Length: 221
Image (tube, rainbow, N blue to C red; front, top):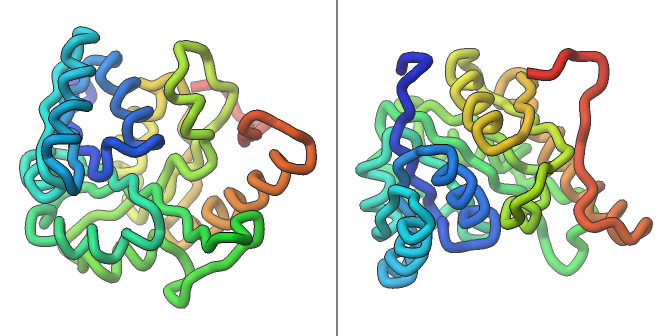
């Protein structure tokens, strides 16, 4: 992909809070979107709202969205991740899949509880196989803030084994008003996944409306 090319983006789970927030901002930034959902009617209704706001989007099943998107963002809860990845796996060979999953285990979501695979991102790579390029990002951004027309003072840690893939994700973060930060290989995603539970606890302790993450000492991008 060239620096000027805007790939079509499939958002799997695109009717949830995080998925719809990312869709809203990516649509406003000029990206063509495919909104995926288990219920196609629900996805089509979400896409219609984006089109009404001068965006370019269409709704589809998760599998169809993944099949037709150049880049796929997976925004589903941890209990649904395995089943959704199995559903889209036949359609994402050779593609970049950005996993946003945090392994939260209710009711103690403020406690770090990592899966046997060490992280949700590594679980995604294992399930999708070596023919899929998995990156991970957007863990620590408060999903409800993406729904608002206001700046978000937060950075996005971007993980992936290929620096060019990470740069694509950094560009997507920049497009929606966030600073993406290269944070190393996919195995490092465990840090952001664990930090999300820490931030939930901070929100509760300090009554914060979505604490975020800022990395100091590097220039703004």
